[in-house]
Length: 273
Image (tube, rainbow, N blue to C red; front, side, top):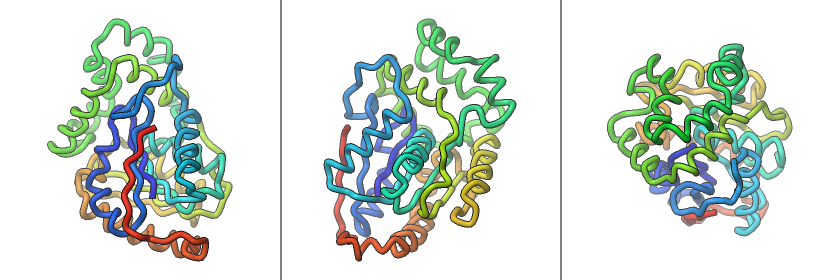
């Protein structure tokens, strides 16, 4: 199982899952470029395809033919790109609080094209502090949901710690990846899909999950975790882990992983790319 964190945080957000799943699966966490312990790239901006290719190269380095990919927020966008690009390498896909495109609905098109276009976002980075910019970016969601949308007190503290460790120029590059993400050709492949959202997450995110569920049809399940926010895996780890484990077992059995020479020996790898 490969866990891909969201934008502006890092692999620490998956710690409750590492402790649980490393006893059951070969469990891999990673810091995307510009996050956590990973170095930064020389590019002016990052793209979802660039970050996804990094994960594929990590899989190649570790001799992993296929895996269950779990992606949260930006990590879910990366997972969608990976599934659309090389579907045979996906045993199962779990998306947590993620979007299908930053221009899926008319409201989103209006915001990203007219009210808050990319050029304006990049300009504001040169004028505002990181804290001010992120507050502005999350303002609409906060207005709809309050602090609950991001998670409980401990979750928010973890997210603040992660964001505080990022360099300002890296946040700008990552924001560009968010802003430019578009719908992927996700109907390819036969892998099962699990969509998980916290009940306090943005209504927009719930809309995206329903859209993705419709695109995947009977291959996908959509579940809301009550009293959880955007990072529901951290908010209620026991419930999240139990749900994901039961689904992952079925996904692994369906894919006949053991017949491919792989196994579930407990093994944990923390990889920085």
